[in-house]
Length: 390
Figure 1 (cartoon, rainbow, N blue to C red):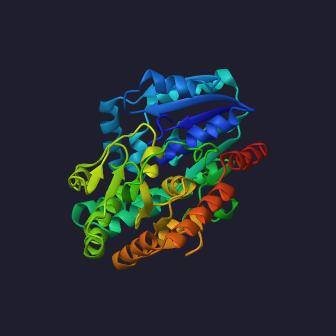
Figure 2: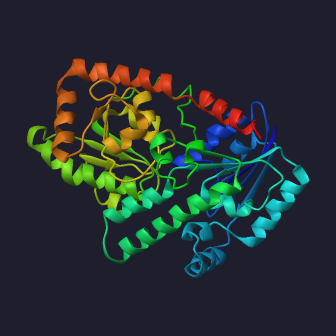
Figure 3: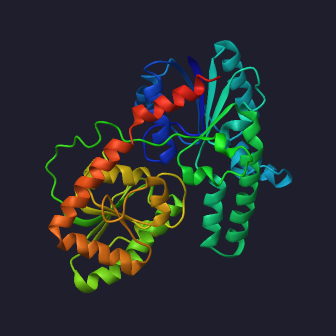
């Protein structure tokens, strides 16, 4: 097939979940199909990033979102019923260019990642289209509203309602629909939501083939885009709620917070030698390799957490919440540890650090579980079969 793919962000480097999903899906699809990628971007791109993505695309078209239009189109949503983020990513001039690309290419299929991109192609009806909701964005906004107050709470609730309505409305413009997890599928408010296909994320086959000899110098590791609100909240919870409990029994506990673009709130958590905030690292596996445990007390956010898959594939026992585990479906005390309160997280950390046999069992079981269940090749095969149904 010839497939036009539309993304709201350039899919490299892999510091965000949507970029990682798009990158691996495109790479797998390109083995058997011709990929014409149309990618929006609101940040400058390095030539090395472009070269990496261009290597598996038949055509690559990058569209720089103009800052004045970003602000204007976002503000204009005050007078519509569309989500503000849909306005943020839509520009009429880019739509016209994408339309001409599609007209010239005459693709067999159009694949859109996230509802942010749907305005560009929703009125094309003569080419089969698939929408990857990826996550239930509306639910994510509602969860963010739950932990804030004042004007922020009102804005999150408003965007949540608009997203929920749009997730429902845009459904009928597409032939096929995908999402990362059963959990998120349930939150899409459409009478035919059972038709949405669950296309899980994966772990690349070479991710755990890591042979650097690095000392596990940190007791706890947490990774992610450190400017993303759920990750910021998580980092703060580790340091402010769990860490003080740990210090009472293990005063030398060390924490590594690793990931791109740390928010000031994350940077402020750093404490000489005890709590290290790295910022961007070239190979995130270096950070996992330095840790004994992966701690992810995620109470907001949606979807399947790539960071959990990566940590477990690297052999780190993972401790996380029921919310994050809904999509992962790990077995408590077998393939991961599930906790819900600071005291429970601290107890689990101490238990694993002091029980070598249990650490080894959870490590090995977790690695096997992830490698067997989450595979990009198998995941993309399901996506291909869906697209081929026309």
